[in-house]
Structures are given as C-alpha cells and as structure tokens.
Image (cartoon, rainbow, N blue to C red; front, side, top):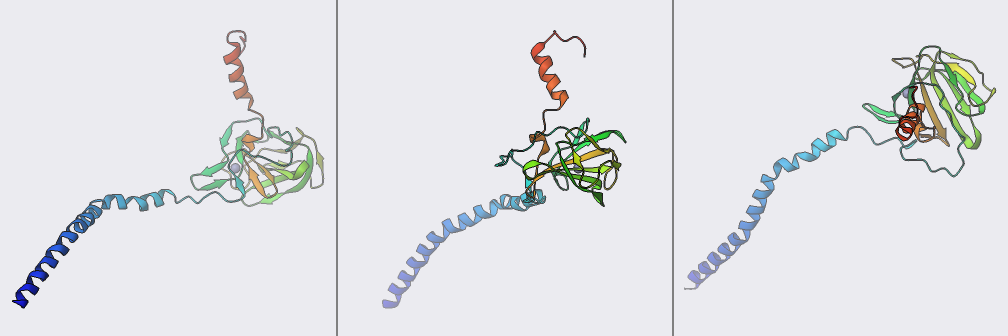
Length: 210
Ligand SMILES: [Zn+2]
C-alpha cells in the first residue's frame, strides 16, 4: 500500500516535470529554428573587417579652440580621393588630380618645416602655419622651397608629380593640428565648380557665356 502510494507520487512528479519540460523543449526548438539568425553575427563581423578610424583622424566637422588660417586650394584640379575610409584602410588627406609639372601653391602663409622624400609620400613638403596648423603636399615632382623658407599663401612651392606610392599625377594634401589630421574639404573654400553651379541656378538666364 505504501509502495503503491509512493509509486503514484513518483508518477505525479514525473508528469509534473514533463509538463515543465515541454515549454523548455519548445523554447529550445525555437532557439534551434532561430539558428539562421545566429549565423548573422559572423557575417556582420566580416563586414566590419575595416578597422575603426585611427585616433589621429578627425572624421567630424572640426571645432577648433585655435582659429585655423584661411586655407586656399593647393592646386587647381579635380578631387580624385576623399578624406577618410578607403577600401583598404584610411586616407588622412585628399587627392587632387593635376597634370605633371602643374604648380602647387602654399595653402596658407607659413614656414617650410620639411622638404624631403619618403617611400609612400614621395617628394613632400610640410608647411607650418599659425596656431599649430600644418599642411602637407605629397607626390611632388619637384620641391621649389627649402626648410626654413617663409612662404605666402598662393606662392608656388612645388610641381605636381607622382613620386612615391602614386598611380597618377596628383597632390596628396593634408591639414593637421596637434598630431591630428582633419578633413581638408571642411576647411577649404568651395571648389569653383560648385560655386558656379550655385550661381547659374540662382541667376538663371542672365549669364550667357559658359
Ligand atoms: Zn592621398
């Protein structure tokens, strides 16, 4: 009698446990069904393979405590590569296309602090401006100024080339301050072409020569 009661109790316990286990099994099954979803994270990780930007690159619109100089375009040409992310890594300046030998101008007045040659940059110049700003001009065919020279904005300082790691004639141009590289497009005036588009839209038929 006692053994039967124990068996009945045991049976009830098993039924109870089974009823508890059913939703758990269901949840487990759902989890298994969601397996394709759990495949996603590796795919995301694959997309994120390009590392986060180096700390020395400022991707946002700059907000300086020191007033930056008024910068001018170092060469008249088309932008061939923007600042920031590239297919493989990061670009800490902009590339402006121009023919071989085209004059490169100082983007702002200052003092030449570097005139030399590096494997990647090729023949390059570095000019120091007010408030700790520096500009860099790379892949030059020729440098026309020396370290210590004072230059004024718009002064020819080099000629366009493709020295160093460059596949076409262009100027690689950087703006830096306190060890950080800033997007020159935020600091240069609008290129003439963009200004022209704005004018023609506003003035409509007034301007006939194109
Ligand atoms: Zn470049």
